[in-house]
Length: 331
Image 1 (cartoon, rainbow, N blue to C red):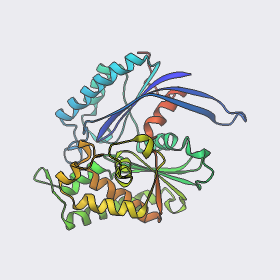
Image 2: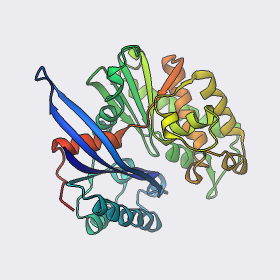
Image 3: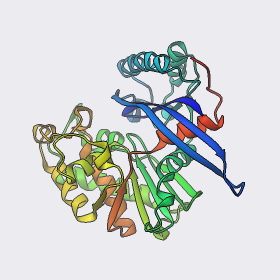
């Protein structure tokens, strides 16, 4: 058993998972039997990708918010005594001209160099985390299509027990909001029909791009990951407060996603903020995130989405336990 700390730094949020992982050879000698026991899991909205799509650079205030979260996470990692630490950075830091400043700041605080991974690597880690438990559910048809709707990008992965094809495309809840719903530095409240139409066209073009590499039409079970999907699920379930145990593996119908997407795109900021399960950092971007999910479901004809609370973060932890990545240290 290995105690690991996994950090996933995306465009909108940074998350930490500390877990005890057991990795051993399977009885047949093929693959590995993996068990992950969660000790601590937390998320902080830092909006690292603030303005990146427009300026190509990480904003100073976004870097400082991210570094503040890193300092908090360093204390947690030390408290639990993690043996291995792996820090993975995704879309925003891939796109930024000044990503060296981000890398150096993380190293100064955590003592590990963040791996700025490719979209395909991100997709594979997401698939590993999301399907680790689902492969045991015989009633779920294969292949899985795992979609990780992040802030800056969305990852598409098709596979059974292992990844068959993957692609990352640059549509995410923050990127779509900033590209289509912001006018004169402010989010339109609520968006106009023209803005929504333009955003939908952008999403459809990205789906065309994903379909060039990933056989979307072959998917039999859609698995949705990340904050936009889990927030839609929490709203659909009518939760009074966020409950990950209720959300994990919940099945949300196409009709529910369509209704919630429409509601989020026609509500005001105050109306969205008043939803009990709405994180303050998602109030302005949930409409775009829900629309991405709806477009995916319509493209593949999915009657429902299976929601997973296990995602890239769990994949990072499992790979760290196997010794993958070069950003490991004893804290």
